[in-house]
Every structure is written in C-alpha cells, then in structure tokens.
Image (tube, rainbow, N blue to C red; front, side, top):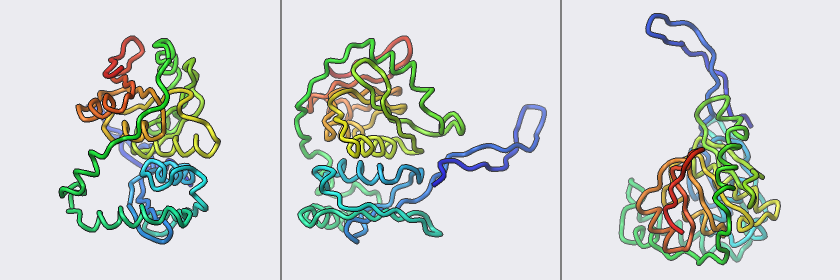
Length: 258
C-alpha cells in the first residue's frame, strides 16, 4: 500500500513554466463490507487499512469492542480497494438496521426524518474528565509537524494524533480525509489496547460534528483541532461533556467547551 505517488506536473511562476515531479497523496475508493454486506464507500488513502477497519467499525457503533471484530481482509481491485470486515454473529443486527436506513436515503446521504434522528441520537456520556493542562496542548502542537511525513511529502494530508497527558505525541495516522485519519488512529489505539481516555486527541483539521462524535464514542475527554469548530460540533461536545479546543496555534487557542 502506497500513501503517495510521484506525478509529473508543470511548475508555474509569473515568468516561467517548467517540468516538475511532485508527490501527491493517494486518494482511492474504499468499499467497506461487513459480513459480506456492502456498507459504505469511503474516499481515503489506502494505507493502515487494518487500523481504519477497526476504527470505522467502532466509530459506527457496529462493534462494541475490538473483540467483536473477527477478521479484516483488505484487497486491491482495478477500481479501488475492498475492505472486508467480519464481525461476530451478535453484531449482525446493527449492520442490518443501518443498511435498512440507507435504503431510504436520498442522494444527498442525509435526507429523511429517519436520518435526522440518527444524526441527533444521544452520545454515550463520557466517563473520563479532562485533567490536561493547557501547556500540554501547546507542547503537542509544537511537535505535530515532525509526525506528519505524508503531509511533508505532499502538502495535502490530514493528521490525527494521540497525545499523552504531558503533550507527548504517542501515535499518529494520516489520510486525505480528516474523518479517515481519526478512524485510523482510533483503530490503532484499539488494536494496541491503548485507552483514549488516558490522553487527548489533536487533529490538523477543522472540527465538524462527526469528529466530536467519534471522539466521544472512543471515550476521549479532550479534542484539540487546529482549525475552527462548527456550531453543531460545539453543541454536541457540550452536551456530551467533551472539552473542545479549536483554532489551536502555537501562541493561542480557543476553548469552545469546558
């Protein structure tokens, strides 16, 4: 699996045009199947797919824990990638319910009363509270760039980092999609038995409501994003008791919720 590919391009300046080779991040369709049932097609970087499978299954609440995931089988096709995930028989009902809902969806993907109810479904209350000092946030921010090799090579990848209470970066995953980067990171933590409640998450993107939900479902009490948060993200974070910090820069940050 390759996260980037060299592509011949033309380098433009106000006075010149010259041949150039530039690394671009790979974006490919990833068709996700659960127990042989087509569930979703995600556009993502086809790297760390086992982590992605575990994190996606947990974030979608199709698996309650990594123990519910029996097998992950990624394979490449001429059209893209297929990610076959096998869950325990007890987890089939949630899959079938979600597929039933998707049959009624319009082309926008979020149409219909049933979908709106799904978006507003209650989040599990956070059991952990954030005791992270603000100095740890700025320590992590200072170190993040050094943990982004794909972005350094291409200038076009999001990063999701898990940081210890002191701000030390312990794990990072990158992807062209901010949601996919977070799923990969959460999957990596789950596969190593690392509790997200023991530290905090730092994302190199804006904070939409989906990122808040994934963080809360994972049980992490603090989410920090480099770009802004949306109103829905702020509302959902406040309701779930998630401490949300956005617009995080080396010299300042905005605490959206406590």
